[in-house]
Image (cartoon, rainbow, N blue to C red; front, side, top):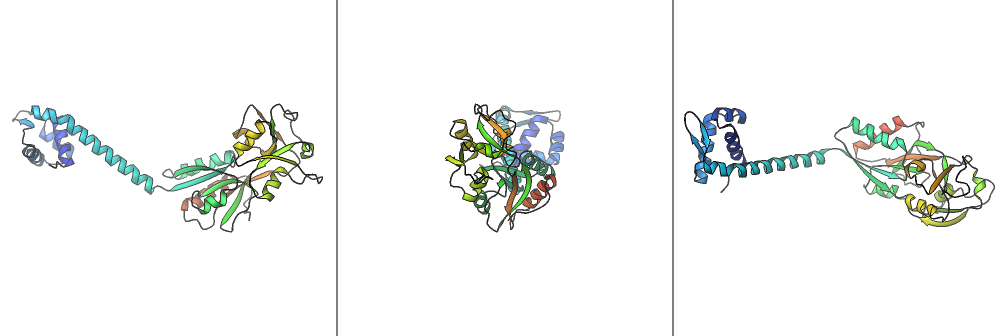
Length: 303
């Protein structure tokens, strides 16, 4: 037996109104048409659902038994339609996958995402945390569309890097370290320290971050390595060495066991927005323009 969902709806509305005229008006059909549909349902079920008289319409015992079942079917159908609409809406909505390395571009990362969502309310933003050297691979594999990452890095020709944010670099030490309470320091004061660094990184990039060689020609002592900023900070907290990070790390990775001291005589870190030059996602250019409009740096591109 197949009872169409619209007939179930007709039955429920008439059961609520108990008046063919009002029920037909709610359903945007004529009273005779509603009466015919209900009669067919009764014939199909083989029971009488309504007692009709010139003065009133009432549910029969069979009608009262059917009503909660019919309402459940109607509700389930409405939920199914709502789910289908949400799936279609999500499928059709523009999607931007944003990758972030370490702390990204600080507050500019959040501001750029918020401005994009305000400009394109139907857009869906998906965030993904990336490792230090995953930028190019994840962009080319389509796992992310744009990435906030620290410069320098090695990128293939398809990937452009646009500077957005510049911040001082800080020495990360344990909170009980002799340098922990300094307001700032020179890189030349860290000659006796052991530096933890990124594992399996591009040597030139790792060298830049730990300032190897130093301005006086000396080289830092190297210690344990990690493949993520969280891992590096864990090593510092454990007393395995010190690290150099962007200043925004002091806010994004604040811990009681750590102190962050500005280094006043080394080049600041630059955060760039990376994307494919041939990306087919129209959201990429929108996001780039939004981020550039918020950026304090002049428009430029690194290669």
